[in-house]
Length: 119
Image (cartoon, rainbow, N blue to C red; front, top):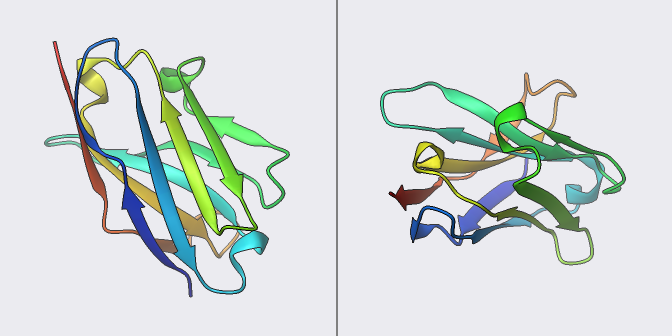
């Protein structure tokens, strides 16, 4: 199992940027697809972005395409989410996750970091 700790959340005005980071412990980090999910107020947790084990493939939800970029550094056991052109609707708790089951059926989760975008 992978232990995950997110950081980098905060409050920003619409149009601004934030960079989330996720530090992972465990020797198997580089073998997992890593992802970011978010849960807005009163909403279900939804997929935001993912990156495969090598960093060669990235996946994005339509509502963040062109604004968010996911990256990873396997040497440092970290994954990042660069968020640009933030909108108030991006306000949510953002969670880092490690896909241990291959389809997110078995995953390790971080504790989440709050992102608040004001208009």
